[in-house]
Image (cartoon, rainbow, N blue to C red; front, side):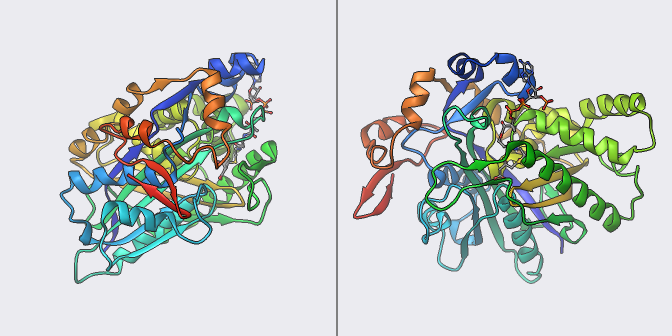
Length: 406
Ligand code: HMG
């Protein structure tokens, strides 16, 4: 049995800061953010939300719209690099909030932005082994991408969560994990030592590592699929790259074209790039442009963007996904979209969430992000008043060192 994904759900916080505001405040020409990085707005998470609430807010709609009894979930994996406790996993908090039963394997997984893919592959392989019943798994990617004030990474911030329903005989897409292209290497491109609230980044080097990993995964993928150099792009309909910022997809795709068409002249390569980028890559970009980096969920937000942009046109199509996590680990794999997915796509509601967001001023953004852990503990009244169609769970503070949610 080849398992896969039957449904996908996304949750993003309701606040955003336009890059225009950030550029003004930081004294940077806005074109650097709009054209140079390709981003327009970034999601800002309020004090009454965290990796746990975003995860639960993303996963609850999966249970509801598929009429799944929480007791049916046999594996719950949450991948994050924004954990709330060194010991207790985010997954256990989510298990509690969603009332998932005790006969379920529940754990948290971390490998920077690649962690979501690691959890997904593991769940698909686990479910594929169960041939005599019909188990269901949920994989969640939830993260807050927060960099230091005034750093070069600041305009690439974001926050959000994705939840994927894993089943045998999947309705949205299947993938054969044994054919994935894999690359990993011990590097220091982006890391967050224990106790640090924001990461340390070797920005330009992180881009080099990303491109090196792309090259490595592509080479392995080609071997596994019996493809020669130059045949990869014709074997796919769409390409989705891990996107810490929109322009990273341009850099990645240009690199892929250079590798795949290495004997073509510069002009010919540029023509191939322009045409294939517009057709294969551009449909996946709206999320990152509006939300920013969401680490583990980034490449899957690209998938949601593509599904909403292409609708019926995407049915039956082959999508190549490149997942990258600093440190570093990467995987390039093929998702085969199923026919008849319109109903699933129509219920995602990503565009609706984007349209319902509230704009922050630069001063409000500073207020949201400069609080110490002690200061952000108690917002129960505000939090209660904030619940809406999408934000169903909120963080209400600590009681005897125990995180409380409502
Ligand atoms: P920077 O120093 O601001 O970059 O850092 P820059 O000065 O090179 O400018 C960026 C682009 O804007 C350049 O375009 C400039 O030319 C352009 P490019 O040459 O790259 O095509 N530019 C302008 N364009 C128009 N008008 C202007 C103008 N000025 C400049 N006036 C960097 C950029 C991405 C390095 C920084 O934001 C950073 O460190 N970000 C965080 C790290 C990151 O995102 N790395 C990406 C790969 S690693 C990864 O994806 C893993 C990650 O998700 C973490 C995880 O796995 O958990 C980050």
